Length: 114
Length: 114
Image (cartoon, rainbow over all chains, first blue to last red; front, side, top):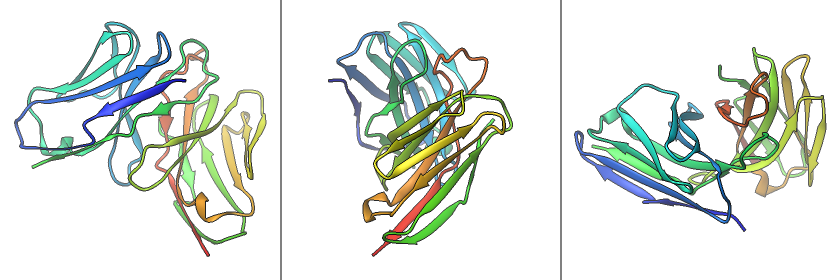
């Protein structure tokens, strides 16, 4: 069966510090991978998605970046965090190809920038 | 563009029914529905594809009217476990069902009381 792992679960970082959040998927090949951010009252905002190794599409211009160094690994990074980067970050995956399946989300990382 | 969900919040007594609506200003290929418990990741409930279909999941069902670009989620004989925030996610028509770029609404908070 497929599983998705996301870590860390919580993170408190000072403004200006770097960030690295990691997500891995097991039990599937060539998944579509996503990073979403959830702020209170604003639903889920798509940040990045990837359909293959090294293929990253950005939805929101900001100081965050994403990378996919391996088929089932997705990393969210920042060189310098801002206060506005605080939020609940969710990684998700879906099957490749036609969109007839739902997303499976990781357990999320609650990031607080202080 | 973000789909619009209504109502923003609803409070029920156990056993009552509820309807949550999701509408888009764009033509849609598919609509996803998810439920999120407080502090947890969203969990996939069902997906409805272009074609005006209707689906069910236990006592939770949904419909998709592609002409009106609207979907409704029906919760019948609600249980305490139904409490949470419900999100619709939409995939625009013309994407070929690639399942990328799922855009979520702001969510509907459902509270079921004993």
